[in-house]
Image (tube, rainbow over all chains, first blue to last red; front, top):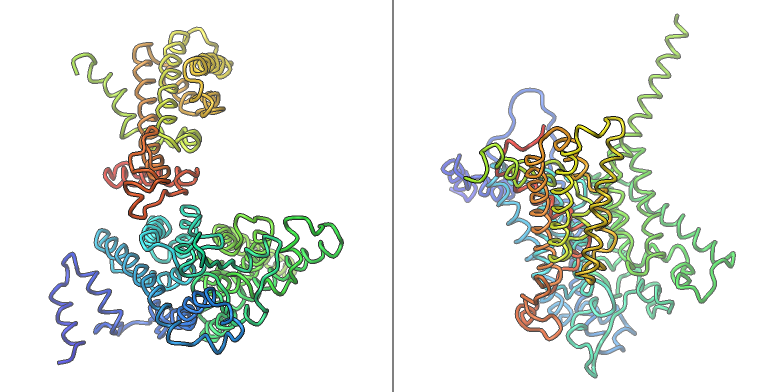
Length: 402
Length: 214
């Protein structure tokens, strides 16, 4: 008898007990249940919630692996600047991987253990099956935090995000805000010294601060907000050999992941495209303002406003947010027209917050959370608009026939 | 309770839990968000509201047959305003630092919906003694939530309680801070006060299912 049969037997044994949901969660995560729908007219497709989630995780894995290498690379490159002369040659090395894995994997483990722990507790209290909602969130969270964030802070934030961001609204599928971004926003407002500045993006920078061999790694947005010029080339930014949150630096891999999500029809291309259009629109407006001479070089907005509009797409977390978080099917708009509006404003607001709010150098987190709140309203008016249009047509037809 | 009849004691006890002005009637939220970053401010606010509401209820109750129905709101406003100014002046005289810290929010007690709410709903139709108890009870219910919120926000946000460094010194890194603990800056922002109140509401309603609205 195989493992699957044994698991089925155990499932029967624990049926109806308190621990059943916890056990079932593990069981159906690994195998198809032995009882599936077999009668009546049901729509049967392979992509259930679990499959959807696993697809997104597959799209995230390249970012995670890249993030692991990048964590090590940024650390060693900050100590020895000559490494940056040949990023590709010095990137995929064992040293980078070992250091990166040593720092990144604990984040992944804490995120999953704490998040799933909360889900299990709620499932047992509320006596329902464990929902799969945390699978993607748990993978997103370690990718959008700075590398050196203390693990206990991450644990506190995950508990907050899952309980306040999701469980109080009724669990998976009912949440208004994206849980991963709720977790990041919590960290951002609760422990700002660990979430921004030039000491958190490179492993070891905080510990070595003030010493003779101190290292620092300002993100590109931080550098621009300070009106100075980033030292990285555009290709470095595109490939991702730059400091930043763990998994969001490589625009190249994010585009690959985005295409994969579009191809598998998991992510909405409407949201991704309209968000890019929105970001470009706002970027062009700011470029225009600079070109008109309304903003002088001394202004504190000059650095970010003067940045050519398309650079905004490859720096910071904008691409990562658009591809993996704006497209979250639960918190995004549901109607196609709504998705265009929703996406456009995410891109538009991201760049606006980025430029105008130096305290929050990355705007995509706040922009997505803001539009999450507006998504139901957008849908409401799109649906209402459709109803009105059809009513008009019906009236028109009636008048014709009468 | 020997001092109070059963009916009277309900006037005090009900607003503390099952008919709490903040968590059940959702009144007075504004000040609960604004001044609860520190426990001391919460306590002063709770006491101030108790004075205003207790005395105000009695005054309104005494005048209830004199005030014409059509202008009762403005009459009530004048009474609250007078009481609030007295409280404000007393605070300025005896606790200047605190009154500076509470700044405009003592003055804004006038707009606290709990006060007008109790005047309208209770004092205008009841005798002075019962109105007094009702005022004290509701102010206590309000103050209780304020103090709970203030306790958690000050403890987690600043690591202090009433100004005492109960968790150690964050700069010298003693106590909990030696272990790497850090204050939660989010606790000092108003949104977190709303979330703390939300959690209190959640806990209260899950313990007593009758309180859950349709």
